[in-house]
Image (cartoon, rainbow, N blue to C red; front, side, top):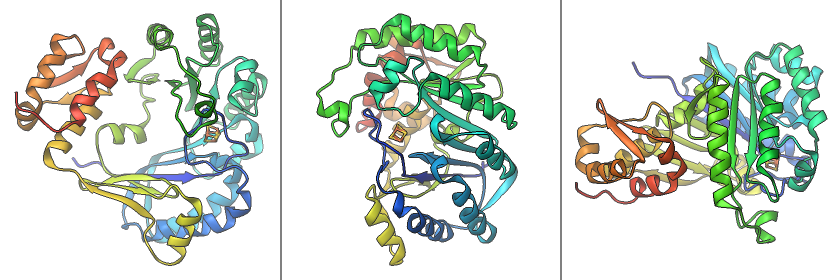
Length: 368
Ligand code: SF4
């Protein structure tokens, strides 16, 4: 059965720019919100009419404008894209602009999943990251979300922060687990050039990050979570359906600044420049700046790479065998994956050394 596509909608506004953040997020551009929403509505109307079963508002910080966003989008959805009953509808939010009233509005609008950005449980780290909230504000937002009726909550964490100890990382996990999340995403800090951390020339400790990852995986599994993707953990039945579409290389539409989407074997990406985006859409031009039809070897390699991000692994099709059999067997010998029952399945070591594993699957195919 072919699955329905999902839709990702990017909201590029934040109150401040976190020091590690390389996403398309523009503090100081709040005055552009009405113009952006109008362009976004226009872009969504221009997408192929279809029915979706996952909708994901990411950013940026979608909750800085939620009431208004929802009003514009419901108008747009009425005539174009339809959402199935029971669709997964996720909104990313930050603790500082969350609260009971907003959460109730989101629930009434049909949002059934929240992804709350925490990053760390110690205020000293939150302040060093440039976050506007402390642990107490996060806890309050969490309580408010539960009180509003949210039964599917994700928390986002970062590890390997400047000067972060293993004990602090353990404390973060324990404090979060006490709150009973359904889902947890945890990423090793990477320092990108264009971020404030990048400008400071900050470096990460790879060995400590690897130890933190090992602890994370063990602790989450012992707490009853499925480690279903390299950086994601879920209680049974709470895997993120939208993100699973990406990892299964299923169709996903996208709208907004920097949104990436995939449909019928073509990968597209919108401009990351906010002004360029609005001007293009207003003038009736496409905001897409990358439009790539993957070659067959690239598509096969990408399917393997995305599949190996997940616990379910990747199908070993005949073409995967022909094009990547040698690479896969080499990595199996190194303990990075297991070839079993027609699938390539990742090992913990494979996830720890994922850069090595994935690099070979994204490079031009080689024969066995
Ligand atoms: S709130 Fe999120 S999107 Fe905004 S700057 Fe911070 S990390 Fe980036």
